[in-house]
Image (cartoon, rainbow, N blue to C red; front, top):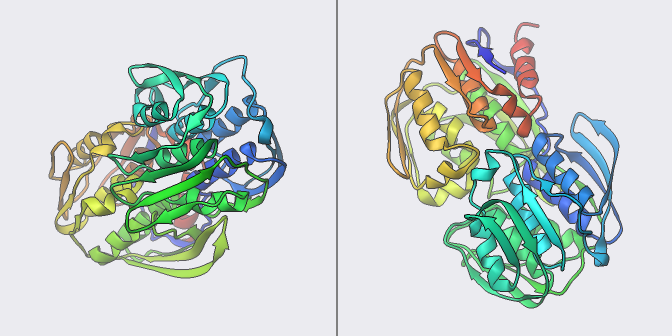
Length: 438
């Protein structure tokens, strides 16, 4: 599908509740499937990626029933396999485009004497899985892979507790190892070079699994063997999805929007700190906890002029998914904005570093790149262009935001990729644009 985006003719105004957090949704479904008993979930993101996790746990023996569907997301009732463990499926499990589904399942399956094959679509089959399988092999799991890529054949079994030192901070790898650690005798410890998302550490205790953490050493651990117990989870709104509407509100003059119930977990809101340095007007009214996460309402106003900044290596884990749209914002800022240590962008759903640099160049910006860095000079007047999302949802939405402040139309190929994380993105954006004319 090709979407022909046009410049905004009015400011964005009003209030929109963005969909449920994708990372929290994946974990809520997966942990409920692992648990003994029936969990009730609210606000689960209804997207292609989360549907992959739902289908996967169903194939492994969990019972998942949709009991409702509200503006906040899916309402699900999940009865887990508990102490019996997952069943061995007759066919390969298709993880679609979801790296979270594949990597977390590797950790879950590692501790059970089952033979399971995981596969994915063309994009996911290019993403590295060795960073998960290699430490799990040290614990005793067996894998057959295609050069560290999907499809992967998993043969789990008796595991030994291990201390893991990761080379790259990764919430997915950390979570996979902690979930495998639940099936071991003793302590499984994961130490990262920097802080990564901590949704797993926040949610597992609600399912009866204590998780130890050491902030100074970026460490987390579990003691096994242990079993999850069913609980109820309300999923907050996704800050990564909210980031695209935040960016639109910042860039389009005279905008004034509110985004309620957004998770403001410190490991996910690095983009807000960067925007504050750039001079953007984004406020946060803190609310109660939801799904183990603190939530708040984001208030966004048109914020031009902006000024450039440097996004350091230490900040990257807290905003890795927002870099494409931050690069778009950087094109409107005075000076050179630099993103450091972003090689991880090359192994996302696409090579986002190369793709974003190419798109901004096509739109008329001056951009420089290296193997692990990106620089954007601003402000630049964005022009018309024909862009390809490469089937990457973050790129499709970032290019749409750029089109709002371009001097002419911008066509975006493979726009249907937004269904991976934010199927209602265009509708929500249009609602905010139409509010100004009412």
